[in-house]
Length: 358
Image (cartoon, rainbow, N blue to C red):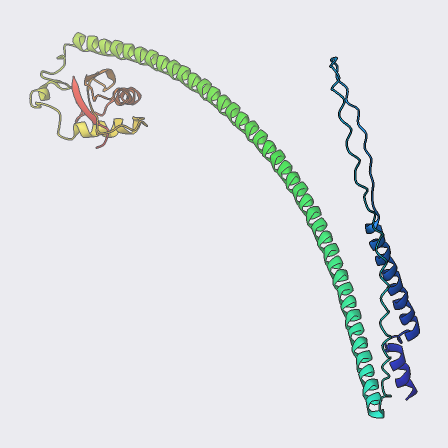
């Protein structure tokens, strides 16, 4: 009970002031108002006599106007006495104070309940205000925390971006350096290969020149040997022919064949059917030809031999159209030196056909 009374007294409205003090203030205000009205009416009723004098001046001299006739005396103004001041109004009678009857016990309990409810409502509103204040504080703290986290994240992202840029620049620089090294190595390799090719080309040309020189030298030597062999064969043939004439024997047989027994020359009209094939079988392995030429070139050669089958001369009677093939056939005949006999005979001149592809 005491707690309820204390709470009611704590949250009760302040008590009203005394009635006498209010009445005194109201009476003083009315008196001041009456005095002000009285003074105002008196101020309005006082006469105001005003006298004005004026002087007129002119720059030019003028004749004075005739003197005016004197005016008749003005009638005396009858001054009326000011009205008597109005008596101040009587003050209004004081209202009788209303005496409230003392509240009943039920009304007092209801008043206390209302006061308690009001106090609780105020407490609830104060609690809500405090809760709202705390919520605003928490919201501000959360916003501040979020702002700090956002600033930290932004700083971290900026740092990561700068690190990525630096890393990319370093990688780019490293790649450019690697590309420069690769290009330098490729250029050096290219120069080395070019130098190597130049050296190989020079070596090939030198070797070709040496081979050509050796070939020319060998050809000259072979030609000299052929000439010497040809001269020797001719000399030997002439010597043998001279010996036969001195013994009274017949010369070379009639016709195209030159044989040892003169009686059989008349029975043979020409070489046997397989004689040319046997000659080609002897000469063919000695042909050295490595060129790749189209078709099947054919060279026809005229060969002359002595009585022993030694080749005295050879010449191309119909070229194959491929000079290298003609020369290869002639060189093969030179290497052969001696042809096989046709049943003991050698035919002069003898036409032999050589084909590249039999």
